[in-house]
Length: 194
Image (tube, rainbow, N blue to C red; front, top):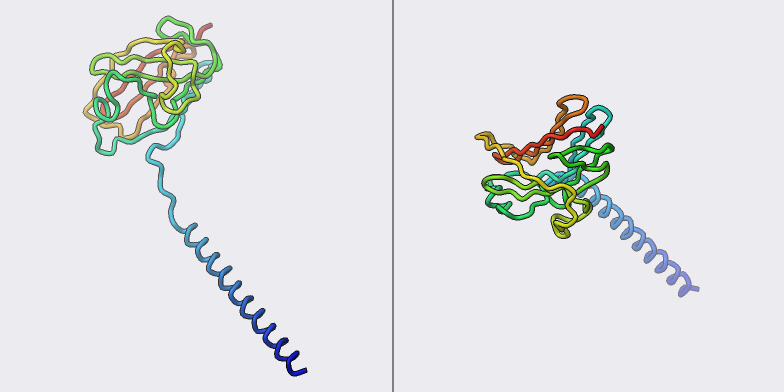
């Protein structure tokens, strides 16, 4: 009988110790979880953003990642001259319209398109491409360009820290799209195809 009592007491002691250890682990896990929640999340260096506008009954939407200058030389440095650039960071920038647009005398049918550029010291080449869903310029193919044209950039002394697109309303049937980053701004007009 003494042996049975000793076994019983030992079993209770072991179970009690295990229960206390489990409670300690749960408490430590909760503390770790709380500590992780208290750590502020790092802001992304190239936050995902978008811009849009209504021009008459046309809805124009541009979706892009907005990298910062952060003291770097951008054009002719980070973004090499005479190379295709996805005009943003990470995924290719895309533009979507619910109406046909006329850009540089050509019709851009309503839909969603990749927006690419080839920056240079003189004129930039703008490409609006069928392949909007791609990482960077990895799958860019010139044969998929719907519209391709040149624009002359304007250079400013003022720095635009983060890449910024704007869809500007000029009238109920006309607008412009602009891109500004570092000291460079490019802009081009469009019309709603009536």
